[in-house]
Image (cartoon, rainbow, N blue to C red):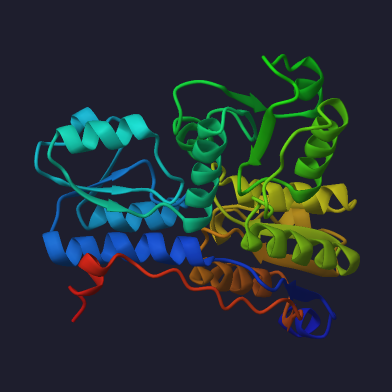
Length: 319
């Protein structure tokens, strides 16, 4: 059986880029260095990034992930997750005298600044995003009023604003590029004077990973995405593959891989969401090898050299 598998010609194509982005790297390093400097327990508002294994590893070392700032003991250390937080959360943390480290992705902070700047100039703001996602809650929580959420083209059609001639829009950073484009095009159609971001809000890593999946879809029979179910960008990768006509499966780890998904498959496309560690990809590769997928080819893709530095107060604690 093994000899047949080796000579079967079954192969795995690895997407590039995949896995951790600069914002995730930074957020994880901030929590790591906060642990070094302040010792456990430290607290993190929401999951620092949406990956089950990253979260479980930190929990095993004394990190406590919370939703309610009021549950954090006065004077403790708190880290804001990569998704960002509302102004109310910031006020609550300061009132409790917490030691605060902000791991908000700088690209999310850019969207926060856009919302505040537009409201200060009297514009109402439309946010394209998914209701309930922590990034959306944090972004909409930058202002007290005058911001609307739309999740679909239908939402745009139903949207009622005070002054259609004085609007701006922003976008959640981890959306499907194609879906966001459809919604923003509808906003421009219905609100011709709407002001758009000077630079696309969808982050470079989201764009690059979705483009890489489109390339995978041209070559693979099925697409596997390593990522957690609550990861927006991972879910979007699966959807992109499906919209290209290929079956897609989102898995947290190799233990979730199912043999029936691979029946009749010659080429598997494999990628990982921006919050998924490369170690999980390697484990999936080993599991695929046991199903006869012994040839592995890494596709060409955009090389990412973006680095976001951690706060100086923490970088001084290194070493």
